[in-house]
Image (cartoon, rainbow, N blue to C red; front, side):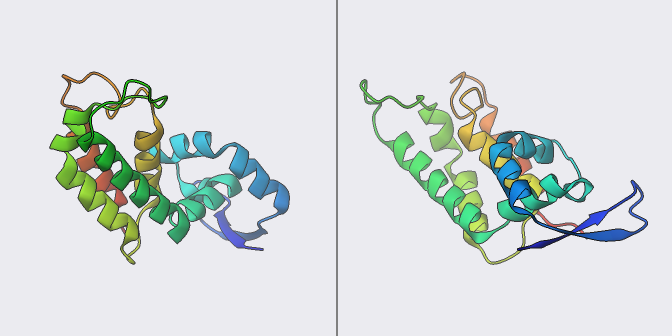
Length: 159
């Protein structure tokens, strides 16, 4: 059972310990997408037990390796011709191919042993899964590379 450190006041004047209970882990699992959205938007991971636990999950090795694998799969899909019978949401292949350097950098950051900020991981996870996002929509827009650069910047841990 993990122990969470939470600040009790907006100014963070003191910290309390709270056990990560089974119901909290279930709640975080059920609300993962909403928690990721909040973290990606800049919510303080220490402002609630659920956000703290989700941030801890996001920076863990399993999630990071899974995201690196998803990036590599995305790059492979972009190189292959579109299959008319595929049931997945089609990607904007040319945008992914044009952004392959940034995507490779992100995949490398995800498997690197160094620390990453949960907000950046949450943004990356949302980008890879959002069927309405820049990977999957409007092939003429040049919106993928700026988002990838913003994610790379958001992954940097600031003290």
